[in-house]
Image (cartoon, rainbow over all chains, first blue to last red; front, side, top):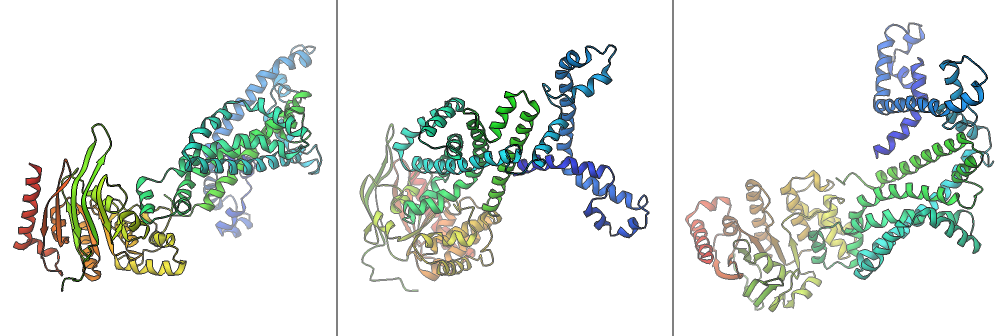
Length: 344
Length: 262
């Protein structure tokens, strides 16, 4: 689960880390010193300093690797933005200003209206504005679009998981279904979803089905596959000896399923759910593209590219990444909840 | 202790039973084996690997099908006996479910038989106490040593009070010290409750120490070569292994095994 939790906290970390860096004592640190009186007495530079540094290290330590990567990424990003945006800046702005240097060029490459590659702070600012400046029900609020996409992702995820489970149970219990279904299941995933999505959306739309449901169908289409594959493996994971044990108890197929196969498959289920929910998100976004959907992160991506608004595209991308992390994080949390300390 | 009489019908009755595994060429695992086991006996099946001792046990337990011949358990076919839950079976490995606590592992067969929750747990607690695992009920299998895990699996097999207990090299994977101790505990259990036990092993001292009758088997094809009665006192302890009687029986088993191999 930690691999999911980390990037999440890393994303949340920079502002916090920045505040600490500027010397504000974090709440838990000041209470911990119990020499809060020392701080209050204005003697902060004295004995409090090593304590501060120690707790700072303690706070930063788990994030250090992530922050390092984030820092490196930032440097590369700013460099790339400068490199990619420079030709436009030179052509449009600096062409009539002879004698410009790097000092003039760089700030301009990082503050264009429609850059080839926006700088991180531009994306951050756009994200912030599109979240804070508009009410939740406004189509200009990014959270509104995130909510729309999250809804079809979750509905599709639930449908896909149920379909995946049903197929796995059927396949495990019937040799005929094993042989007849599996090739179709594999084949279904070789068809590019970009080609399937418009067909499904249009077909369902002609039947009067619009809104969340058609998009969820695409999510389900991508989501059921990892669940089926993992659960077939999981339900078949009990060894000969465990199965024979149930056989000596004259256990029914139902007992064997609920007392042996199902619990044995749980460690296979949750990783597949994490893959599945990420796939469901991709499905929902793809499904928002073809018909010029009105709402959703996919629609934001599409309108962004119509109007050459690269900053909007990027903030929608970042938002979908955050949504993906939140969703897989939720699955990881559920896994912890459902598997007690016994499993090893 | 008086031997049980009036038992006209043996608990296990194997008549001219053969098992052939398909293959190229087909393997004859057991060749016209006959064996009667009376109630209260402790029978050991001993022989080199490939002699079909495990196969014989598995046929009696309806885990393997006889190609020809007849196998009766409690006067029923082995299939019906299994459906009637006539026996408990202990495998070579503990085969505990890792997601269940020790107590929940022991209640498993009871749950399958529809015994209600609290009653099943009470029975399981009693069985765990019998194998010396009181206080470990809420542990998970991985928190226990190999010997303790195998004791849990014995408690599990005893949970629904089967008259017949089948054990397939249950202590094979354990160290000798643990094995000795478990042998002694198993003997006490048998002595106390007089269940019929069929025990597969390839250890001569183990077979002699535990059994009232030892079935010596030979490989290729698997058949029974000798039945050796053992009349050691029921309340024997491990010290008996130093006595001439014990050494004599062990010697006879060894000779029978050697003859079978030539």
